[in-house]
Image: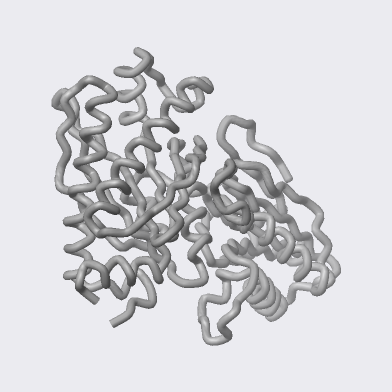
Length: 206
Length: 163
């Protein structure tokens, strides 16, 4: 059966996405731990298909300031990847990388922002690389783009981009465990529906 | 003074009379449109997400600029709103991510398309926009005070602004 929207995915489809995601996120954790020279463990990710308001609620508060890196996918899979840093994860990363810590995102400067953008990009790229190897598809990634702003506003970008097709987002959430501290990340992988169908077909389920 | 506060979600509309605040949070590329008839102290806040309803069977009328504005006007008119004294203000339509080379350049322009469509429909409906805060690269929270028609815009790192 061809899917018309994310919410048509059944449990088996979601399980497959979860399997792929767990390999993707573990690659991302390895990349991050190399960069920070720290052991980083990662929990099995959860993959959920959620509406806008539920996604906001799962990640944080609607007006909460977060940093986000966005990369566009093209070639055999078209869509978006969005990585969201909440302040605790941003601080953990910046603390290790450049020895800085902040009370809020507004206190950061351009160097901090570009460091976060780059780390978001590394996480997304290693995730997508694992994904392409596993599924056997070619995916080209754009240059990353990033912003620091209200969570709710950032999430309107993917929801509006696919608004004519679906009101749902695919949210992949794993916990990074660094020096005994749990840090939640938020990764949104949003292939367009055609690409999602071809991914599931390639994996022999559909 | 305890005021009632109504929250408007994405692709939704709320209206009220008298001492009420109507608020919608974190408008990104979406647009918030306030309608206010000062004579009746009747106000509405509409939060649209996309320019046009392409599927006439789609029941989510407030998700789109065209069907959302039409339906809001229809409802308010039923409650006695008179167009030529109605004050309309709009906010939102931001471009949250600036794409650099390599990406699809058309991507992220939805905010701008939303602004254009909202203005076109309002003009067709002969409603003048008396306050506007659109574009830019940041999210906005919009609040309408139905008691006196004041509209406030809240953003990150800037003082609250009266529209």
